[in-house]
Image 1 (cartoon, helix red, strand yellow):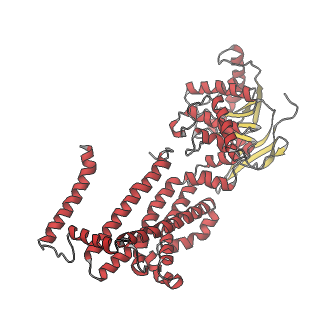
Image 2 (cartoon, chains in turn blue, green):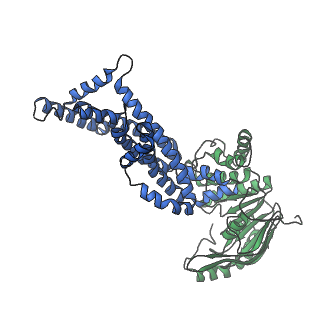
Image 3 (cartoon, chains in turn yellow, purple):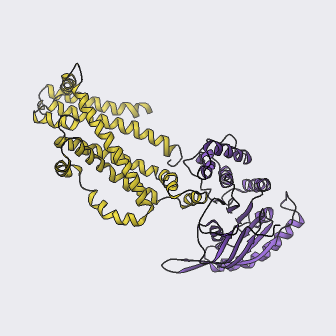
Length: 260
Length: 269
């Protein structure tokens, strides 16, 4: 019964929704051109998948392009966020110095900066990856800062008396202490990064990318591909969060008994 | 007893200042500690005994006076001292072995040798079988054994212990006291040990420093010449206990009058 509630109920909801959608669209109760039925969406996505076969699938090229941008952008954002968070968390002076800049930049949506970045560094990966990285950076930097500031001073003392250097303490005490905050920051940052990349792909991508695929399909009124593209975004991020992030959490803060 | 003290506290005062007022934690403390002796510092709550230990550790700097360790003035924390914290302060993300090797690899030990050394201390502290356990899975007594091993492994000159058994239950505490005496006899470290408990002080110490209520000063020093292993009941034991208690009682009364927070752990274990 528990398993039923945990797995079957949400699956049941999805099946009922898709089933009802299918029936309503086929019987023309809703407009099939604007809301194509799931079977049609699947067929259209399949057509993107097979378009450039036999050598390569066009769909896979779109997914690949977006995945590549996400990996590079989020890696840059995470690394920069960790370093900035450590420095700002350890030094209140540096925190105060940079705080106005952080406060001003953080709320700007990546897409709003896209025109500027396109002028500066051109279409395609440079702009998309830079804005994606920037989007990931802020929540990670802020969270790591908060984590570092919450450190148990006794642990810092324990490290200094046994001869740790300042750099050693940063990476051996502050950073692991802030791991819970870091993971929350990565969750937020990755979601922001993902959204920014898709949005910037709408206007800055030149050939490939899921955002490009959706935008391109919309301009040809291929609503099946638009819906299919959105479905792929959902599934992609679901796998990323459940797979990678939860695994990371289990291997670190859960194992160390730092969360209940 | 050697002629040269290993730790000297010379005319030390410590005042904590915040925006509202000054707190005089210590005034004019002069003390000397000799190599390989077990020294217990006891006093009423808030008498600055932990502050004294923090000054020796280098976590705090004295407002006036100097702390001399092995002939040199203490300026900052360093691995010539080991520190054992009341709340253990183990690194939650490191295993038992990882906590003990921490100070070793940071002091230039090769990884393999550090692990070997840590295993020696794991044996010394009866922690075999828990090398790969994370601290949150251990009992309080075991955590503190890891804390002691971590502080001793890199071979400091002085072992500083800040109410290390204060958070343990009575049974475990007694056991840890016996263990500590055994380890001290094996390693022959100079120990500075802070406690609230007279029973603990007399069981452990070569020399007991009794502190006054705040601002902390040295009220008196009691040498304990009892053979080891000691018990907690003999006449000679009770005699020393009485001596320490009589020095303390006045100060405790003063301390309670001075502070709103009363402290009833002094005479219990």
